[in-house]
Image 1: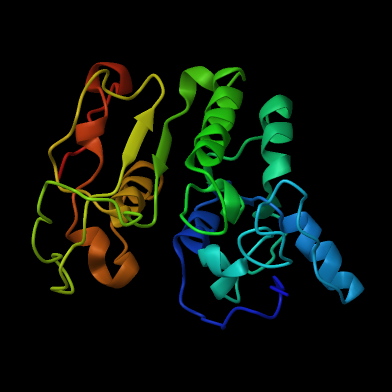
Image 2 (image 1 turned 135 degrees about the vertical axis):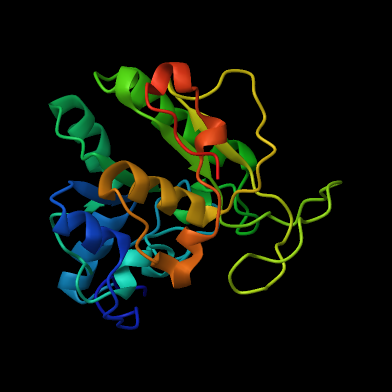
Length: 243
């Protein structure tokens, strides 16, 4: 069983979530399967896999895995009902007009396009398409920037060599990861050639809501590029930095 309350180690350092809380910026992490796992934990049992999960196991990739949710590693935010929500609540918040300013979304393992477990890429593609369609059909469509990205390259061949070592830790980058900027603020029919990484999203959150770089992720936010190369300054109004 993967329990949301006991499976994660405890860390006390402030996260980007804590910093948003300090500034009064509403945010939430929506994780598919979270409610079922929390209910099972309360019963002292395991969450049951949905019948459509090919692996058919009461663990990853069929049910919620706290190891996939970064905020579950930090004592200040773990299972905080204000910010930790089930993915099912996302569409409800869209409809109710209560979507936070910053939202992180994570579908359950077998719907992530991750290889293994008998899952199909088409299932993950459908999940992402479903979420984007929900945003586009909501009152938030005209004012939402949707960033779709992945945690790893998936083992697929890339004809472009990695760009060298990272700017902070000196560790080499791996193969490129897909990232899509979706919505009215994104550049249309455009491919950015700026070297970005996951910390670039953190840097954008800091720039847009915190008005400062905070040294998050071992100072990576101070060294990586912002996501401005993905955005259309004619629509954003204020140009987002590209570096």
